[in-house]
Length: 473
Image (cartoon, rainbow, N blue to C red; front, side, top):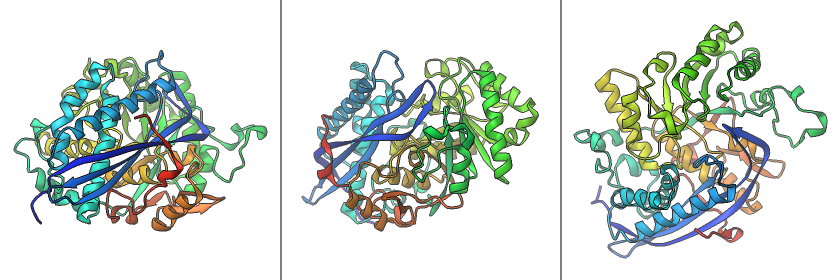
């Protein structure tokens, strides 16, 4: 292929939409009922004066990026807007370079500027991740490529400049070997306040909106076989709830796989090990215990890197999620006994690719099965969910946590014409029912052929920019 394009960021506009959940979603100590989705539209230009637009979107989830109790939801949203503003300022001032070269040039300074404003690493990552996705989308459109084609040919110019531990690794060869699958299994989230069986929902509180409202109804509706179950860190309550969850799965699903998400609710590795030991000893959890794939971020980020987890990892593999605040986090985690790390679009498209390269390199070196998982941040139907699915498929995931479709009423908030456009262009991924465009999950699977083959980063259509509010980012 031709020489890599040097580009520059010449324009950026931000927009927002409110999102109201149909069901409350409790993760860790937070319960989400509403949030705002931010959209970014950029224009890039190459040395010949050719230009293209790119786009990205992400839900600004309160109390995940920064869990400080003294901050309000509005404070959390303002943090994320500020992160994006800082990232766009840095990238606009970076001059020309490859898409990854622009990222590499500003990553360290962006995190430093964010830290100077008391924005933590996850918050800092949000803005840069969103901007990078929009720029990558624009690059793909400028070159007429689907994102998988662009990454396999390394058109963004990804190198080891931000990951010195990958020096000497054949990064271009690794990227060339990536083969995105045309479908992914949906891993259903069981939140901490979710109804397990239909009888848990008082008749007066039922929504009756045509969508599943309890865990058992979701299994029936979608044919699910992969599950992510939240745990609270209160052992007795967790065991009681896990037994109820397992009873439903044992009765309804012939073969299933489970991940446990601690959402930073445990103070120590010993507390997590105690819960896992009790799970293993409980007869009612026999199938459930044998089906656990890994445990996700059980220890609070303030302590997670202060102690080794090698003994805990002897029970089940352990991965980091909220502790993945910068590009070096996986390196730190590896030394402590963590063998896994999550992929989320909100933390960085390039970060996921580079961490996936680390998985390949370290697994070969250590003879240990390092791993990645694809996790959700209540990603919304349309642009955001499609970009996240494209990334997960590209890095070789076979299942991905999806919860936005369960806690939100389809593409609620988007104009009817926009919903119709996404449903038509990506008919394998969406269905239309009760006046809403919704994810199509059949036999537990999401079909994403139209997503991975779309010119750009995952989407053949754009949202209706005129139907959004201008953002202050």
